[in-house]
Amino acid sequence: MFNRQEATDNPHLKLTLIEKIRRKYDLTPSITLILGLTTLFFVIFLIYPLLYVFKEAFWVENKLTLKYFELMVTDPNKRELVINSFKIGVMVTLMTSIISLPLSYFLTRYRYPGRNLLRSIILIPMIMPPFVGAIGMQKFFGQYGSINMFLAKLNLMDFTEAEPIDWFGGGFWGVVLLSTLHLYPIMYLNIVAALANVDPSLEEAAENLGASRFQIFRRITLPLMMPGYFAGAILVFIWAFTDLGTPLIFDYNKVIAVEIFRLVVAANLNPMGYALVVLVIVLTALAFYASKRWTGSKHYEMLGRGHVTSREVDAKWGMRCIIYTFIGGLTFTALLPHISVILVSLTPDASQWNLTVLPKSLTFSHYIETFTHSDTLPSILNSLKYSIFSTLIALIVGVAIAYLLTRKRIPFQNLLDAVAMLPLALPGVAIAFGYMGSFSDTSFLLRNLPEGLIAVIDPRKNPTFLLIVGYAVRRLPYMLRSIYAGFQQTSISYEEASQNMGATPVRTLYKITLPLVFANILAGAILVFSFSMLEVSESLILATQNQYYPITKAIWSLSQRVGQGPYIASALGVVGMLILIACLLGAGRVLGGKLGEIFRI
Picture 1 (cartoon, helix red, strand yellow):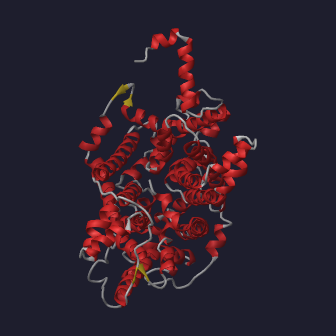
Picture 2 (cartoon, helix red, strand yellow):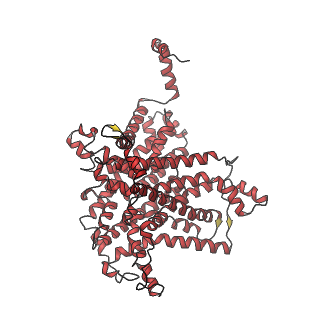
Picture 3 (tube, one colour):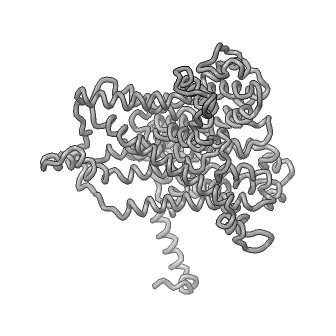
């Protein structure tokens, strides 16, 4: 057994232990510096804000208390927040599952004309946050919107005898519908990736034993794809459970995320906001744990993975009709929010789309105003600035972590990987609220800094720095996953040959490794940039002053104004949508069929 006192007294034993550490890990001075800086980055911008949130939730007036957590149980208003958010998360997860399971099967197991085109079309909902589409969908499905007007024209509805149909059920079903249409591609991509890992020989063996196609799917395919399905289901649940923008637009305010947003102004006076953030973090962590525990208890394993060619069959005419009808109907429904926003952006004013099925006239004036208005043009420039710099930070940190994980032996390697991927599972409202509280001028950390540095870091004075860092932290998993895959696919022998010729590790990385994984770097950068451009939670919470508004905060602000506000907001949403389309097309072109791996935990 190792004796600490003996090690202290015996310098030769000390040297032996140090030598063992050196042999076990590649801790050269440069590697140690990179590891230290990476660790410091996560400690300051991820761990510290989360710990601060927990401290403020439990430590009130210099004493430990559970008062605000007890209120969540005893106060019916607080209970309603939790129940409503949970209902939205469950309903959206259920609906995306119902949509994505047959969709994935149709697009991976059958061959038919137009399949590649359909694979691209079904990803369209990813190009716009659901809260932007909510502005237009209210025009379609409002009580005096296009659908009810159309039914009235067909004499299927009489406003004089009955109230118009409330299609969105006071906002709940509107939030569920928009979230489902936005998130089902995430579920689909995870399920497709899981189906690709199913050994087709197992299905063929079951078929040879007389099992029907449905029995094969239920007994063989579905169990084997469960880990991938639950990875997508947990992501969908967390995104829906913590969504902030869509409930705000639908004025469905009795959910946790909206309550957290409203408590931002009193973050350092009312600990309830911190308590709600802790609740969100704990519930999402429990969801992940339950998923891992459940899938971990099942032992559906494949004995071998030799060639893995997709088990596809030619779709007969009957099946083609089913596939085209299902995907066509889904695509039309998924495009409704985009169509509605475009129509609103082209409508001159409220009088031109009032008690009518469609606008009476169209105009491009709102797009001109988007690039000249004092609130919209700066928001576009702000978003571009925030997104470019956040992409650069994510690129530097992502390359450093991927290099350490794939090319070096370092202590706590699995922990570093887990911490880097943690933001994928953390709600944006949790990180944003933590930044708002921990980096504000009431924090001990900032009170001891120079006034000029405080102004740069304090989000209440200038949120630019924290918006950039927050975007980078939130989207870092996409960059890391993409670069990590590139490093894994690149043989280390090229780097060894370079170093044998006398090149330093840094020169080898710059001249050999990075060019070989350039496609992965580009794909990750495009994804980080595009999703940062339309980030919702951090933008709404951290940007409190007009001159610092990014696109999403400007859209929300304009949508709350009477008159031309919603129409300019829609035009700004379309501009953001076009930017994101270009980014996702670029990412898809680089990654191809591997795009789904980016969204896997």
